[in-house]
Image: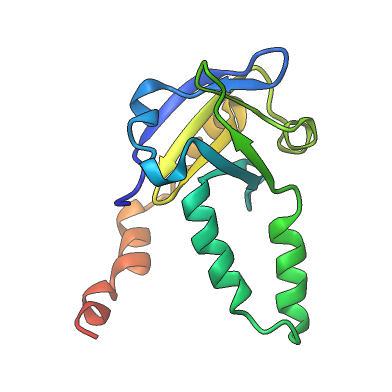
Length: 154
């Protein structure tokens, strides 16, 4: 999969369901079979992975040394709240109530799609996050991506 792309404003219904936009559904790989795993994100949002991508992440985490205390702690926090979800016949997913509460999601949400994941944000939190754009985005890009070409030839 080359990755997801897009930013979609959606609403969550009273039962905690989100209807995934058609443009986003077209990007979901067939081998995901309309199954997803949802988990807590690092910045108080939720992350939705297609099932096939979750398997890849899990394989990587399983390679870590279980005798290392930091690895065990990471696993506990990373997997905390993870749930399998399946699209219903109306292309909706039902978010677990505990994750809705944890992420402070209200009625309006933003699906921010990138790489192998779909971030689910409360709209107010997402708008607040992006209102604090770095003073010099060019410098941030240089710091993050500046050495990329050096590593491409390895």
